Length: 248
Image (cartoon, rainbow, N blue to C red; front, side):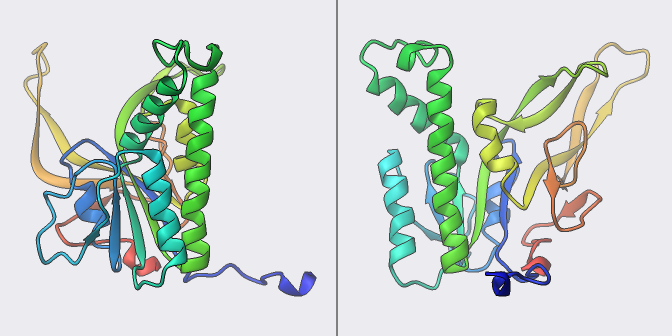
């Protein structure tokens, strides 16, 4: 009905975001600073969390069935959790891949599974779509923030009107990446601020860092990063700080 139309968007709704980065850069630590979080673990990346971090952990999920059961449990049971962290969708993708190959007794790899011709990658993408949809229910019905953690990779972009270039992306097939890049509020790349040493004449340069972590979450040619919050500059992330809390 027209009476249900919002005259302006809600400013205090939960966030759905994807945090991407190399292993050990602090993705889980940052995610753990969201309000009253619980982690759905497909890998155990919680060693960096202190005992008094206030982060709750679901049992380590080894199958997609367990992942969906945990989402259903959070949807149906009463609880006070305000944030679901999925750590990580990259390992969840590996689980999906293994299950697809195992389901086809004739397949020796993903390329030949389900008849080949990319059918397996389409099937995996559909699994990610459903998983993202289920997480969306928690956001809408339970008012939970959703934080997807992902490992980074690079890809070559070839466009008809410019030279090819390389950019950071999520480490999974491009058919699946869209579920964690398009249909979210933020895609944030967390990385160490890096410098190169060596003279201009030297053919070998060394990358060094002082440990400063920088987050990019606005569109750039070198990332699939984005946000719907008006952020237009890199953000320096100190331990324990969460720049997104002001938007919740």
